[in-house]
Length: 296
Image 1 (tube, one colour):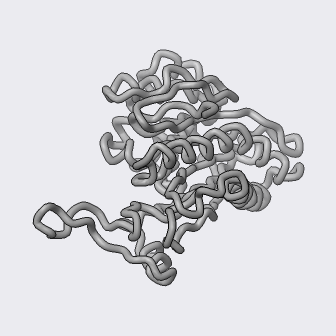
Image 2 (image 1 turned 120 degrees about the vertical axis):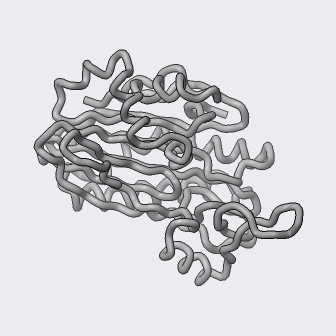
Image 3 (image 1 turned 180 degrees about the vertical axis):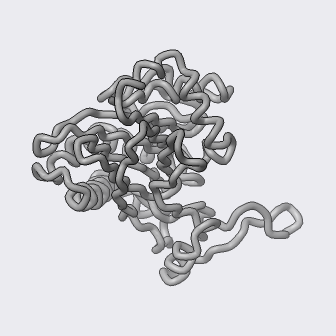
């Protein structure tokens, strides 16, 4: 069981920026917002006889929606992902719900999303338009969760027995990842701070050309950038015996609100008590200002 709506509604009350009014299990609703669209979705499926909950969040990659064309392309990529990722995970898992199979399926899903974006949108060769994505596959029968993420979307697992939430995803922001900085620089791109009005470095480290916080995304970083990589980081971890909460969202949410506060919002949500009957529950929250994917 996945309480996807709970945290979305809680975050909506916490932030003044628009966010989706409702996300029902297995469906991403239309909710365009001010120049930014994202989506959150939770889908119960069966893989090889195992009940698996697929929870996903995708948001536009930072600094890639400066033009109307870039915004439209990004939205198209997000919409395609919202419609196809869950079914593709089931297809590529091929009846095998083990962690190894789900990690392999996740990598294939991200590669397929990138291939579809390039085939459907030739303008990506010269326009920066991309999204970052996190996907969690919760297999309660095997008591494990498999996470695949690319870019600045994150997943955490929390329980009353652990002092700190466990990070399930891998950080791909160049500000925070030495591995990503090295990879980007090896591609021929630069990693540097932006400059303020006086020409002095300011803000976090970014990928240039373009000024992107991450080069791990689905889509394109624009003409001249060779650092873009759609492949996700994938990992499988066991679920503890006690009830746990899975929190998925854009890292920008957790830049603004502490994890403990986000979890508190989830627990105070009106329908959160309904999820206590399950050994694990998940919540997905797009970035403040993000809505759900809808056809362009």
